[in-house]
Length: 633
Image (tube, rainbow, N blue to C red; front, side):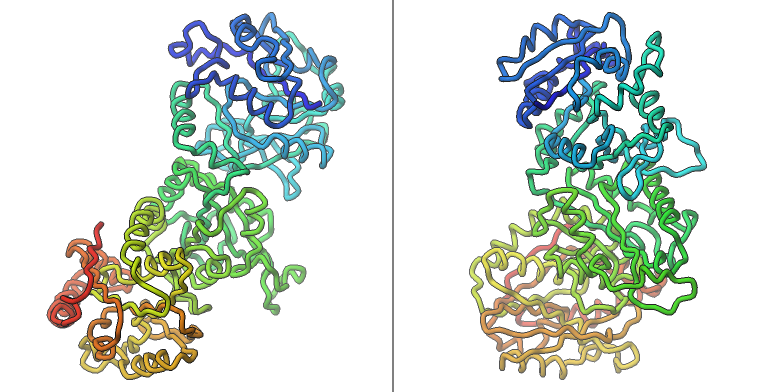
């Protein structure tokens, strides 16, 4: 029979105003005492033998719980005459416990698959297994370090040395313990003072080279020992965050690239000193944390295969990353990296890592690893990155993608993979995903309700007004109705900077080549779609191969969409994206700042576009006949 020990002897001094005379484990959490939430969770996972250690206001706990029959469990009590500490209460009563037992602190609300944790412990035959998770304040938490096999190798109690970086793995106060392992410790401790698991017992066992195992998890567990934390736990309960973090509930993950997306793009980071956060990127991670979705880092790190960085050095680099995020109140739920690189011939390379693998993006190995940690709904998950490699990864996995304009800005030209959406930085991408996308998607569903398989859509508007965003929104909305759609961005026919003639709008585009593609579409043959490298102001070398089927919806989008004669006569649904001048000018400045133009040059360029491009588009007869969509901030 599974046995659970709940340590419920604390006074709850910090909760005195909320508790009155009640003991801390009876604090109300959304209509039920915290202790009852724990009992119900234990029962759901087959724990029928419950032992509650009591001290402060012990009678109130006895009166509330009784013998446990109201929950169909058996409850016994062990009363401390004086506080013995979290480990002391276990050690002095060790003879009364089962061979394997779980320890839970009486001030934590959790939604953990206790059965899975139990099986993990027994399968690995550890002397003790500790439930670990990241939090948003690792700088003032007791941290645990594990090796690649999950074995605990160090404890790092608070306060931490200022010149060292530690992993963000926090002891969550949920343990599985072998009775025989504690029998060895029983004679080693002086019970004249309180004995703590974290500060005393586990570090002592580690010094003796005992087998302690870490169990990292993304499941919900949070202590409710202060008024602020009680309020947070209640808010998480009411918002559904606690249930979403359960392994039985498919969760949404935001997979995030590292270099150029979260951290500054550097030519191969090999030391912690080189790693720096992109300013503001921690705010994006914090937003993900607050939403209850998973923030998971997936990064190719060929520096290992090249021999320029060891696994231990990379661990220190990622420890620094977690420390910097923690200082901003943010955390990553997990970090996955690929150490491989297929190309050989580097001085000092490590031949064992010079292989073709499934984990190197755009392979899906790291995403599969993440799915072993948590139940992830890939269809509704996202990947945020700065390269075509990231966009191809998302495409391979069926994830929605956001290209950020930091780092490579999508101009690496390694894959002909179109991003679903583009944002200027990580925080903007997270804001789009969490705040804007749901409402925009519903609007797109309405706008595409009358569109059928085989139809054509033409989306036009001024530069930087949101045309590509709406093209993807419509494609996704059609996919919900099982209608396949393909997007053709007319930007792919922008000429290289040195081939643009007078520089006017139509001269900047290779309209003859575009017309040839439109004719091929009518014939139903496979076409090749070019793409434009905005930073280098020339076409990318790679072309996207696009087979065309009669039932496909083709979505054309671009600045010149309403100026192509073939589209004037094409039987299609026409949409004009109208953006506010303020938003469009802001996007215009962001875009051309990335391209290295000065403020004076940007202003001059905008004025020339207003006189040429904008007036020409506004005069198109298709504008007035199109369906207008107002793009708002």
